[in-house]
Length: 192
Image (tube, rainbow, N blue to C red; front, side):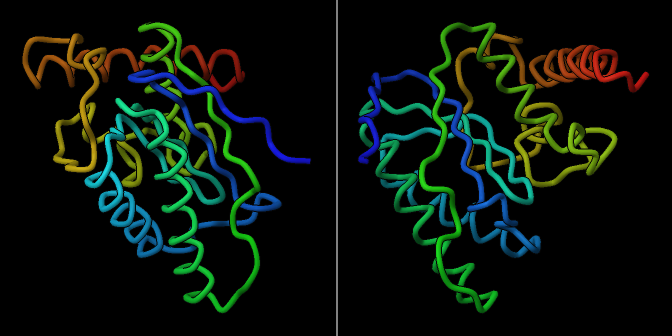
């Protein structure tokens, strides 16, 4: 049965999650992650798609994307996932599908929802117990958004830039919100 066509709107932000087929690892090494990001950068440069946040986990990817031409999003994702799968299969002497058949795409409805998406994406490595603090994980947007590290692949969303009038102010506000977000999550998860 064919997939139902996605309804996409211009300049809407989408939280994209793409998992490995049968939840297999899609990244084994930092080199794999670097290749994925370099491919993403190439495709982003050639389209209207903007990447606002990301996190590359072992068996899945989180992306926060928008585009003035919404059809560019599925085109970019298809090209990126196909090219990366070819690289990964060749590098790791495997064959077959790397990715689950269809990525998950959730439209972000409000600024508060968008900030929550930023925080959720960047706290994924903590939630998965890979690190104790999000700044310890190199493969997410956290260091750019909270510490001001350069990430050419990112386009700062207006919702993020509204956090402060200066880069330092935005970073400080983002760290503060992440601290609160993590405290709430740890309390709910019984980790305090």
